[in-house]
Length: 383
Image (cartoon, rainbow, N blue to C red; front, top):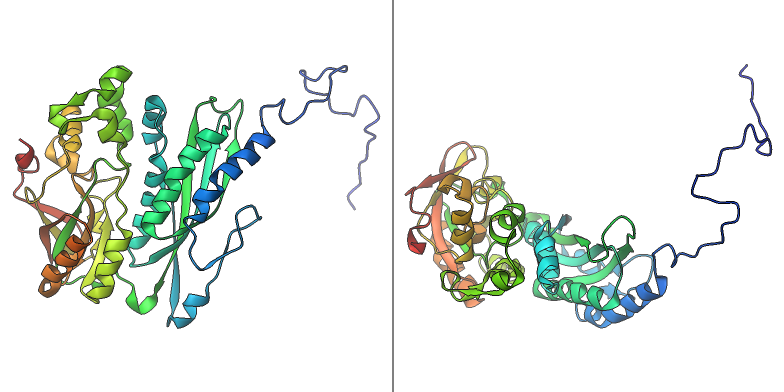
């Protein structure tokens, strides 16, 4: 039988020592004195309520401020086999550029875009969104600026912002530092799901124009385009950037493709077979995710134009064509794999919705990879 060992905490020999920074005559310390201002947090919540309400859909139940966001699943009853699709992501080191430039109203759009464009790849409709904002020092006005972008992203995607968290991290983060992460939930009826299993040899690749760098590769971007530059230089308009400044071009938010793509899928069902969201890894390491193991995506280079900031960054980093294609989106933020007989109709629908669409290749027998033809011409239209 195991012997039970006991000791008395009143015995100085047994009691744990107090940390060295705790003095016997120390006074009580409040949470605010420790660096966390609960009242400022409440003021921040009040500041964002109106923005949050503008994103609400009919399915939203209640209001922000509860322990959990509520969303009705009643519409699922009309589906044969509703599949929930979830996605989470962040904005990465693009936030550092936003902090340097003092502009925080667009990175929230990036946050939403990175999540909803991912779940869209199954043909799912984003329903609601949650955010997490960690800051060094909470300021209601700054938080409202950040959340205004998140709310705008949700409106563009048609999803509701039903909850989130604002966390103050004094002593861990600098006062003006912050980080963002987001979480989206979408739904698709299983018979209407799209993906690699639907792709066929001969399918056409339709590329949707990106708005710029989007939200990937910013550690490299900052290294070659931002470090060592003054605020004046970042704000200086440049002819090579089409008259824009580096700040404007680099902080342009990620394009959200949800509404136009869902409309094309619905109007031309089942013409759209698969989607690829072109994020970190570029075209090379994302389009292959939409291919089955026995088919390749053959991309014809030189068939589309790029926002000027992309070749600008690639040249600054001295990236060759191969490296560029697996680092940045290279001007295509989303690629659709489409039935060749309905490709023209799908393209027309997307263009009517405001998208710039390029036919950029086809699907051939292979081994589930991305191949390129017309190599050496990626930057031809920018030269």
